[in-house]
Length: 232
Length: 335
Image (cartoon, rainbow over all chains, first blue to last red; front, side, top):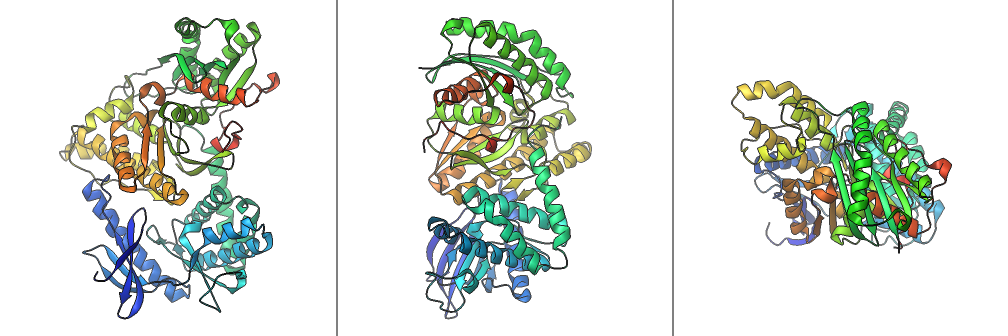
């Protein structure tokens, strides 16, 4: 990792910025979690690097915008991938819209996130950790700026596929939606009222399977309410 | 100045305590302990509480040296918890409230844990890991509510530990979790167990089934009960720390508070401490007096609510087995 510079330390990985064969790149290095037993830690790390790669590649095949994978170094637990420039997290964008009380753009944005997640699920990619921090946005037309962008001018770029799986079951897809819903509601004040727009985007994209998934999702939500207590 | 009397009995602990302006005057407790291999059931637990509640109440009042007429509010656990034990204790709380002509206040059990943890440790706005026999939640405060970021999608972590203790028949005295913790200190060989994290949620039922099915065989293969306790703790605690860390990162928080009965496990605290150190976050934890269910936490949360003007109408002073942390509006918090 010559000439790479640390830009962010996440919960599981350090992100370094640099160039790979002349292209702006990110090196994502998973580090050992010292609180975990070493053998548990190394098997989880390997598992997650593999999962992340597999999902990123599958996304590319499916035509979902994700960072391109340039190289993987399993000895260093590092993935070299495209640096998605001029991006912003969905979390920040939602907060921008919320601050300016821009309900209609917020709802439209949720609709587009729904379409992207629908596309992931259409291709049996379960993200496993969907939150507004794990979704980036870039502009379609003017790559330099995201100011005053309409949601329809945005490309949605899901990232952080470490917990992902390739799985066709409605149960796993339903859990994916449920995880996202809860992450959104607990982070953003206006998310609750806008989540239906996410779901309509999801349905619009994922025409042949969303019905079953949403049915499961309703079931899972109900399960959530019940789980307040004890199973003796 | 609020003097509050708190009643707790949502599971196998019966606790009564008196608090005066954040100062603990008394914190008395009895635990219903079952024989090895058995868990506590609602009927017998309620019976235990019935038999002890007046004794503990007397003890709590005597120790605090507070006279009934000085008390401002009677607080009791409204839920969540086991129906029969909750009801038993609530009846007593209602009776003394009538007897002494005091207002009554129903308190959410989980909120009690969080507020008590904040009081004892001085944590200001922590990300909370609430781990006990009935609950497993990662909680962060936002917009007047304690919001659940992650939780178990099936059984609670303490339930998983308790039921594993029954599998290998270790004592429930003082608690199965404590005995697992002691055995785990002597374990060294790690058995690979299912590791189940879904986003910020965790699942323990698969691990428990695995243990229930494989324990006999693993013991034959040369693993000791100590190794199994060690492996179980290492695996499920790693899951908890991982989800807590994720919530911490997502909320940009730099404080972690562990509450609930499993929270007094020193290995869990140690692992959380390592994680916090790596992130320059601070860890706050308490010991068994306040981690394990107690009456004082109900009194304290109740006192905070009372001071902020919350009142429970007489006809609403019921109990409920299902009462989520995020249902309560935290009117007493001003941030």
